[in-house]
Image 1: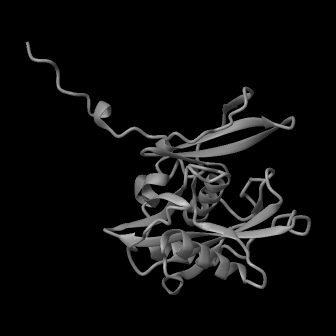
Image 2: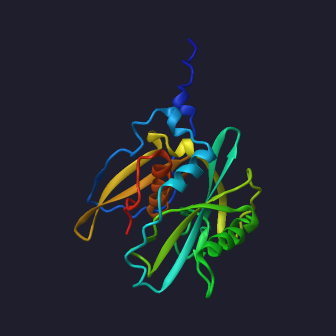
Length: 242
């Protein structure tokens, strides 16, 4: 008797990656994504819609720690349209780096003396993946955030590209360039919120499970706000990451 056909679910690429996640013993499952109730058609966004909604949201909320820390950083969320989808560019940081090795992040880094943070975001994207600064049109700014593990704050910018870019990772900083459709990130099955007990307070930590990678931490918080803004389900002041 012939064996039954393969279950299609068994053939699907595995989601999640080898990122080291310091999950505390005291953690529990949190809420579904803010956009969980949106029909699939409303989770497939054109770049024009993204641009419009970012333009309507008002100015970014600054991190309360900006006057208390020594270092400013900027990251860039590059977006482009290709084959009827809007895509975002992410990077997998080099496994040889001393800090946040192997994690998925936006291209970005520290501000140089006298440099405008918008130029920092463009420069770092050029240095890390070869994205020409002239190809980046800045169309939005997410809320600023700070991390409890570093003496810095981060300003996230959203950039529009003229089409699918040809990118080459700088091997000193980046192991891989990831092109991810917004509709994939907006699939509720690929999102998870966990509540972690940090310093006696339950804090939400967010995760996006990609094929072969996990996005979490500050990058996931920024992605959640970006996706929430462009779907109308998250507003200013709701970045939720300290």
